[in-house]
Length: 164
Image (cartoon, rainbow, N blue to C red):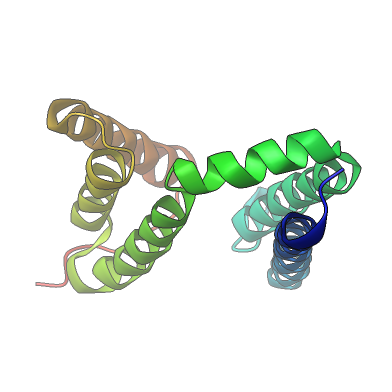
């Protein structure tokens, strides 16, 4: 059992992780509520609230599982995860995902769905995940094409287009 400063550090890591899981669960619950208020279906087709509701369910479930795993993890595993998460550059990755997600949101308004999504997925894979630029480019184009087909062709959801 860790003592002194190490015990305090581990307790902080556990508290921060548990708090993060709880915040994500609350955001997921809020997303589900908003999705329900927008309507899940509209005349037999997916309504504007279906995707926020699905994302809310997934986020809440994932956060709940993470919270349970964090609370009931053995002290040795907690210590190992605390050390490895810092060594792996987890903070850099989280900041990268948040920054690119924010840029993607702004980019959709400025240049439309397709260019913003290609650029964002490429940046995530090449810069944050440190894969080769070729793998990043192929994945970005394939993911964007798949998302476009799914939302526009299959679900009939209008996506932001290039404004000019």
